[in-house]
Length: 288
Image 1: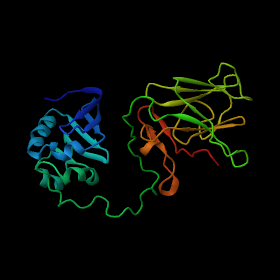
Image 2: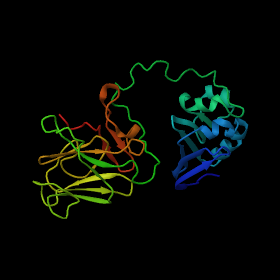
Image 3: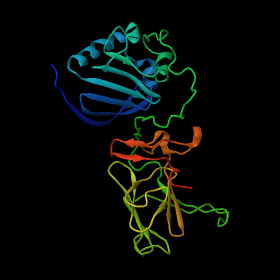
C-alpha cells in the first residue's frame, strides 16, 4: 500500500536507566522521516536493537514507500525502508532495505551494545583526506542545532582597532529582545551618535535566527541592502561604529560547527539554507 505522507516537526528527549539523556528531532514532509540525535551513549551502552529486530521494520517501511533516515552527532548512521542499499552492504545486513551510513558515525555503536553488526567487509570511507576542502563546488546539507530558543548568548561586540583600543574589555550588548533598534534616537535600544535616528534593527525571527534589517547605510560582512541572517563573526559597519555579532557555536545555526570562520584553508564555501532559500556565505565575506 503506497501513497503515505507524513508531516512532522518534533523535539524529543529520552532518558535511559542510567539517567543519560538523549535529545533529538524528528522531521518529515512527505515519504521520508529524518531523525537526528545529539548522543549515541544510551544506544552504545546496550539499548541498540539488533539487525534481526530492524529487518522486519525496514521491510514494512519499504512496502509502504516510506523511509527513515537516522543521523547522529558524527553524521549519517542508517537509512531504513525505501532506500537503495548497495550490494556490498546487503552481505552484512541481509536486507535490501537497510543502508548503512558513515563508518565514523557507526563507530560508537560498534564498540559496545547488543549483537553489533560486523563491518569488516567495508573499506574505510576516506583512507586519506587528501583534498578535504579544496573543491569549493561541493554542496553540503545545511545543519542546525537543537538548543532552546535564544540560547548561546547572542550579542554585539563593539570592535576596536589597535589605534583606538584602550586596553579595556570591549563593550557588549546582549540581544535579549525580540527586536533591537540601533540608531541615534533616544528610544533606540543601542544608542550611537552620528547614526540615523533608526539606523538598523536586529530581529529575532521564528526560526531562532537573528536578522539584520538596515534602514541607513550598512557595510561590512553583511549585505548593504536587504536583510542578512547573522552568523558568528559577522561585522556590521555603521558610520564610525563597527559591531561584531557572536553566538556560542553550540547554539548557532546554519553552517557546520556554529558558523565559525577559519579551519582548513580558512574558507567555507557558500551554502544554501533550505529553510529560507537564501545562500549564506563565510563570516569573513565582504571584509577586505
